[in-house]
Amino acid sequence: MKTKNNDAYAVLRIKDFRSFVLARFLFTFGLQMQSVIVGWQVYEITKDPFALGLIGLSEAIPFLCIALFAGYVADIVNRKKIIILANAVYLLCAAALFLLVFRFSYLFDSFHAFPVYIIIFITGIARGFIFPAQSALMAQLVPRELYANSTTWNSTFWHIATVAGPAIGGLIYGFAGIKVAYLTVVVFVFISLLLFMNISKKPMPERLFTEGFFHKLTAGVRFVFKTQILVSAISLDMLAVLFGGAVAMLPVFAATILHVGPEGLGILRAGPAAGAVIMALILAHFPLNHHAGKKLLWAVAGFGVCMILFAISNFFYLSLILLMISGMFDNVSVIIRGTILQLYTPDEMRGRVASVTSIFIGSSNEIGSFESGLAARIMGLIPSVIFGGSMTLLVVAITSKLSPKLRSLHLK
Image 1 (cartoon, rainbow, N blue to C red):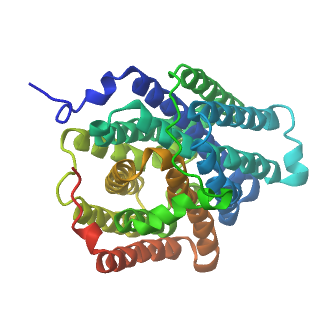
Image 2: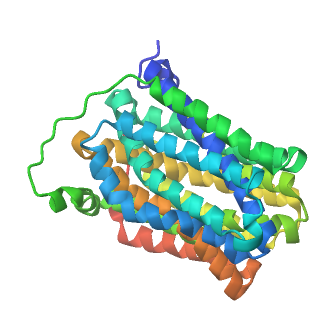
């Protein structure tokens, strides 16, 4: 007879959690579609890899500026309300991108990609609020003994969306055009908003802090840096994504090296997520409980090796396979880090701690995109990706040396 602790599907029997992961799935699906559409559109307008990096920077700047305050808000304001409001802002931004190409495409002649950057800047503000609220709310939807299970399935659904989103976004862009592609994004984000609204209202945790505003605002930072396992896992993940990711440069690889159009770009963008889904399904049945820290270090190292090999590949299918394997390695890090976050964080601090992790992890994708674009301009496309993968291996070696608690980590 299965118990909650060994039932891989236990958390999926909770109604509110099912609503949450479905809403987040559709929301992520739409945003991943939007990401590949925006990337291809901006590259078509500018023909400059550095312009692709500016997309990430446009979202990262407001995200970083608002993150700590957003985490504080998630600990004092109903988290469901925050998610709904931020989702609505994303919906308006998706509609604005659609209107740009449907009614106001002449603006690109005068301002090039600048209108797109402005809209992405606004989504960065919304993302700063939605991430800590989602992380904190998810912990309220399931019992503590199912945190690892919920993290695994949340990651699974999220990665399925990141598989399907770019692939379908690229296919719709290639066969039906950019207008239909952007309109499809609007539809998915709207449906996700309705599903988030359907989640039951959850009470706020008891407030145990009486300090001043600034002390409360920065409590998450102090907590993270006092917890060696948490700060080590976050730093490892952040630096690996910052240096090792090649996703921002995929439009350039697709167009100039692999010679595939937006359809091929969509498939390449889906590659890492496809691998992550495979790994998530494996880990749902075989959790990473023992020697989790050592497995984390090996997985991040494997991710760096995949990036180096991807940089020197000239074959579409080999590149796709390497991206899939990199996604498998990356998801090991995602699940272990997410489980650590849920297990080690007090309820009344979940929003603030999640905001700190979002600064390290979430922004590293966008800043990593900027770093990739800048490195590609300075070093050239292929050397820049090889450099990033090599830096990832160096980060693993340093982290392993400096964090004995992470090396000996076991998840229970």
